[in-house]
Image 1 (cartoon, rainbow, N blue to C red):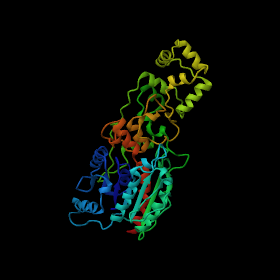
Image 2: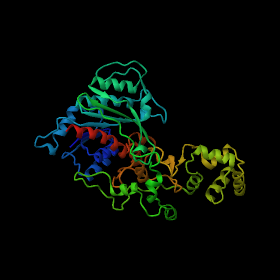
Image 3: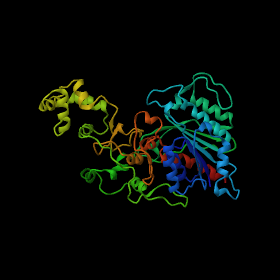
Image 4: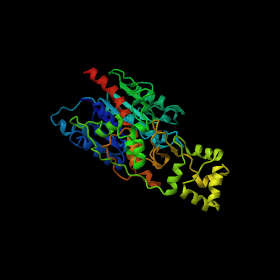
Length: 445
């Protein structure tokens, strides 16, 4: 049985893929209480019981030691007879990525940028055969200043993270593959999600390879493949979903992740985490203005240059009439003729231009932690937690616990369901990577 450790495990996307590949997770850790509830609930579903055959630790990685991990594993009930593994086969982990992200302001002094150093320290202390690290693409060009490695080496200011990482691994006895950007859509995930993957391996084991794509450009899964059976409006559902489940939908319902006895968990028709956001009539009508694949900036430009017919958008027409001090017929006429200015466009659409209505015939854009940025191609609303979980390739039986969403200053400490989904490694991507490691471990036996 191949044994793994999952650090910075979050709600458990990486762990799902590891288990699907055939790994037994002996130890996992994260700092947040919200993700702990989700993670441990799922593992109990799978028969991975705390203190019996796995150990979950909630805490700061800066306080986590190899000795603590080894002791936690040795004390598991399954090793009561003394058959504790001499080696951990692999450690997987994705240090929090916000400090490296290209999607927003990046701070060179963000403390989250240094958590990968703690990841390296734990690896050095545990000394597994293989190491996988996942992060956002922005990690590739992140520069560090005054960085001191786990062995005490001081690096030149401005050195980029991959160079530091490669040298750090070498100093602690590991070879590394060139980091590779992997798109989850190439591995059966109905979502375009680029992540940089680092793989390191101990000097005494065989070099791994990055997995080859499991789908072609022509067979990449789309939003339509993933979630048409979850459409809520009966009229829309009857028009789009013919009652025949795609293979991806069947797999999501039947389950991909085996429990401790090798049986997958069927959701049995229960759709968890599928609550629809309560949008006002004005917001629904505003969402309906978007064409599939169109973002807020493109919609604004289309209306300004070609006009738009607002007939039937009664709530939106009335709102514009009141805010712009115009008769309703005049509002309709001006927007239809593209006789509009910025003030009129701001009233109709608001100033938020980052929202996009996704295209059903393509893989989804990268699933984010905030639900408001994407509009469903099928209905004038944002996606549910379950729909986004499908787009991440989670089984339907995987239940996300805690608050559905949160905002403001609470986002600094709370990790609601939408964030748990958006932060996760897609299980099918994790599985593809884990299978390559597993192939070598089996060959060693």
